[in-house]
Image: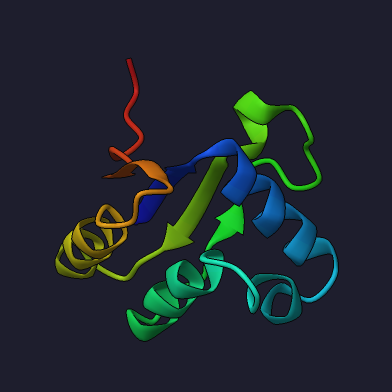
Length: 97
């Protein structure tokens, strides 16, 4: 299962840059540290959906793999509390048309 998180542009760019360098070093001096800490407390790591992308519409999406629906709901509820999170939701299961 996968949770999709859309961040505001400035937070997304900071995390994208952090992925390329050291996420903890890049995020330590900003509010994104609280977001990454919250994710870590829940046992997940935010990964860019489109790694290395600089276009604001694509760079703002991140994913977190979760083992079950209960964990997904906890992740969505917790991360949705952050102002920088535009959206957080459980990705629907893939289905044939």
